[in-house]
Amino acid sequence: ARHLLVVSDAVLEVKLNYLIAAMAWDPEKPQFRFTVLVFTCLLTFGSYFCFDMPSVLQSAFTGSNNCTDEQQPSPSPPGVAEHISSTCCRDCLGMSEQNYNLLYAVYAWTNAVVVFFSGFLVDKLGNRAGVIAFSLLCLVGSSTFAAGAHLRGTDYLLPVMLLGRLLFGAGNGSLTVVQNRLVAFWFNKKELALAFGCVLAFSRCGSVLNFFLTENIRDAIGLEWTLWFGVGLCLLGFVAAGVVSGLDVYGVRAMGLTEELQQESRRVKLQDLGQFSLQFWLLVLSIMFYYNGVFPFVADASQFINQKYSLDDKVSAYITGAVYDVSMLLSPFLGGLIVSWA
Ligand SMILES: N[C@@H](Cc1c[nH]cn1)C(=O)NCC(=O)O
Image (tube, rainbow, N blue to C red; front, side, top):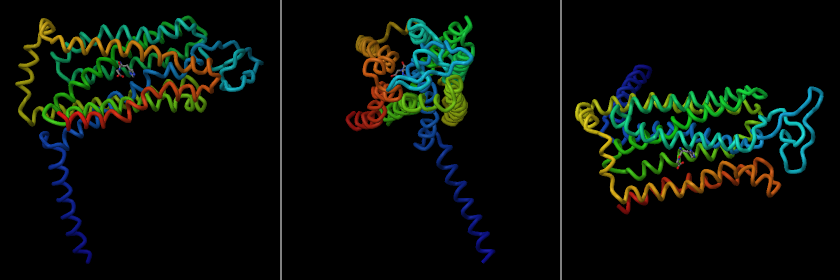
């Protein structure tokens, strides 16, 4: 019986090895591109979580930290969380509303300017360099932002946090560009819309979890460590970037496309911009005007809802995040629907 067990064990191992080889290492097979998809989805999960952390934490960012040594945080009015009382808040950064909004403005402007150049750079240098560089920028940006929060009460708080948002903005937008390029490469023949749907759903999942969890995490570990928790998620994105990069090198080489892709990237030039169609630019404009309304609203909505309707911070954040909930739930299905209609 023992002999039989050893033999069946060996057979099982051979079968398993065969399965792994057949499953994972032929880049033309669906298993390979879906493995790429899983790690591509992970690229922006953390950065999307971090992007709207200020919105959830707006009252902490703008509340005044004016406690004296003996003073305990005073009891909060009904419906307002304990740590944000109007008279004493140990966990608050004391930013003005304008400076708080600067955190978003700096992100948006850097994002808008940098993505143009990073898109061109990725066309020239390829996905691997881009995915590593931009996820590293997100990591450095979110770390700088979190480190800035430790400087409360000093003149350095705002410049350091703004610098963090600037680096994060440069990284996150560009990371989305290279993420879409990876999906377009690995899913160019089929399942393209479905793959885009999955990527968007996963990114939105980062946003949604931020609106559901951040306030609770802050209650448990305090403001600074909550921001470092976001950094941890960006680190996850950086690790995923390493894996995607490795898979991409392997897959392209195994399909014998390395030389062809290098030649293609040499041919890319700035003048190619002129070849984009009117339809493309109209699409760009419609997306721009759509986001014009959404992102600034999300940035200020948590505190607005909290103050106008006297709702608890957590409930206000859930309501603000609802704008992303629907998108998260529907994207993969709508992507699948488009695939089956096309
Ligand atoms: N650069 C991102 C910013 C963002 C917004 N929400 C989470 N991150 C971006 O523009 N994303 C586009 C999007 O559809 O979320």
